[in-house]
Length: 129
Image 1 (cartoon, rainbow, N blue to C red):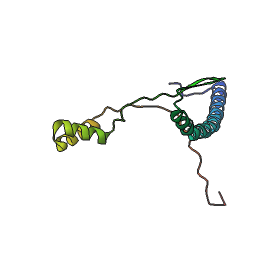
Image 2: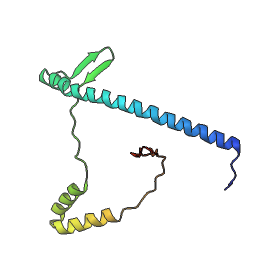
Image 3: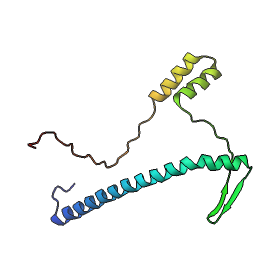
Image 4: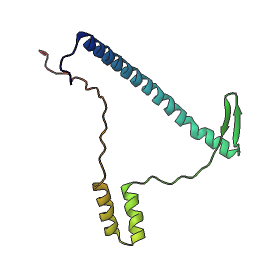
């Protein structure tokens, strides 16, 4: 690894960091706006579904496409409690199921993930700093 950084490399690095910080700020603003839009959409979705259900409307044609009322079934999420309960029922031994699940959870492989994170400087209450 080269320990000397040329001035050009340093300037390029600084420019990339500034761009990265700017993009991060833009993403935060857009994420907040997207969250607000999704919240508004989620507030009116049940009303539209209720109307379509009550009048047995399966397809609502609009200028932007057809809104289709679809009913589907999915399985509930698999978590430690559900897995322990179901395995306990299957084995007819809740204690053995709990031991097996604890073993499986405790012996999972670890995966390293690398990412960049912004650490905002803490604001000091000290007026001298």
